[in-house]
Image (cartoon, rainbow, N blue to C red; front, side, top):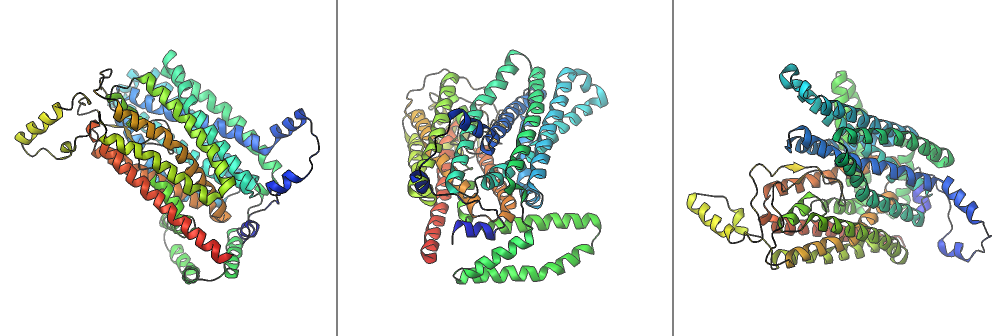
Amino acid sequence: MSLRADASQCGGVVVEFESDDVRDRRPRKPRSIPGSALIYLRGPKFLIYVSGALSMWGDRMWHFAISVFLIELYGRNLLLTAVFGLVVAGSVLLLGALIGDWVDRNPRNKVAHASLFIQNISVTVCSIVLMLVFSYKKWIEQIWDGWLTVVCYTVVIVLADVANLASTALTIAIQRDWIVVITGYNRGHLAGMNATMRRIDQVTNILAPLAVGQVMTLASNVVGCGFILGWNLVSLIVEFIFLSRVYRIVPALSVKAPDTEVDQAFLQGRERRPQVQGDTREAVALAEDNCNLSINLKEITNLPLCFQRFRWLLSTCKDGWRAYYRQPVFLAGMGLAFLYTTVLGFDCITTGYAYTQGISGSLLSLLMGVSAITGLMGTVLFTKLRKAYGLVNTGIISSCLHLGCLLLCVCSVFAPGSPMDLSLIMPYIDSNSSSDVGGMVSQRQKHTYPLRGGSNQPLLPDRSSIHWTNNTVLFDNVPSGTVPASYTSIILLFLGVITARIGLWSFDLTVTQLLQENICESERGVVNGVQSSMNYLMDLLHFIMVISAPQPQHFGILVIISVLFITTGHTMYFLYARKARRKHRLDT
């Protein structure tokens, strides 16, 4: 079945585009460069790029600054940052399906404007509260026996969490729905916009924290809060204007078919396809759900209002997860989520470990810059591979490239200079065993440094890997500058991490476009909301994994576990690719 037919059955508005070959053979009329540039600058793509760049820049600055602010507020203790990281991850995990359902049920312009307004106003109010707390901290601590300070901390965390939820909704609306409609469901144009948005994300990921960090260092935390406040107010106005213009010049964005019509069209389209036993069972299950719908509604209306609302929320979450499970790209989405359970990214875990191995901060900054370049190379590779081999095959090639580079990280665990000591995993049974283990550790001190007992706390860094690393461990109070016996292990580790980002970002873009192309319009928001929940769930597993083995001597074990999770994720994608090829052969 053609993409146009699939899109029309899902309630989408399709715009016909010529293929690249036909368009290249057609003679082109000469057009002046200034005129072409002016048309592009006024077009929807450029406006989306500028709006996305402003939003990403603000997000990167805020997520970098809030972690520093919370540490400063709590006397350089990481407790508040840990609480904030858990609240953010838990809220998206629980509310991801509800956010996506809200995106699906409301007009596109209202969703974008409401999300944009809530996000920026929450950050603005939170910045004002932080400015007041930093300016009058001693006075606030004396009111209500210090309880006003607790109230301020709670308000800051709640507002920051609300801003993150609104940012999630805005990302789902713009990058998972608007872009699909703007490109007219054209796969080539969609791949180009996805790659460009990811390149913008890579650049802002490096420059935005650097900019706000310089302001906070050269001035003060209060000035840093004011800088973020002003940026969000200006960004709110500009993004509102640009998104409103895009909505006006792309009429398809205003067309959103009702869910009932979409579901009927989708089911009719499935009836015209070749029937197999699995599809029959799924159709029967859908029919049974529709038969039980009226009964469930009657049961809900008989409950008190508060219980009706609560039961409706639970029902929406359940339906969202079920919709995610029955998607044809379910295995691909799950494979992407498994890539979040990893320590092999440029977050505080890997950089903290490198710090314990004698790597200087300036060298780490240089390596982060190189990793950003390889991430950009991944976006270029994605567009080339997709055009040459197709989208599904691009994912296979990217997976193999990613896994091949990560083998260097596995080799680093056993290479000279590696501090891995498996004996430290065993608990201390008695004093004798403790002394024995202590003797073994002392022999490895040339590669590692002891940590204080209270320093293994979670920290929320900037979003410097494929996902938002909300909960990581910072190796605090660790001396640096001591030259280890061999740099072979750390060189192999960073060589694998940096080169793997080429395949990583190419694979990420592949799965992103698969989700965009294969999800029905009426379920696009809720399925992507559940995908965000899955990403945060796997990130929480990564958090638990690091907390369970926080010492530098354990890092090799974390590397091996991370590679196993990543291998499992890519295996899920291989199963999806096999299923997709089989389905394509049956249809043809």
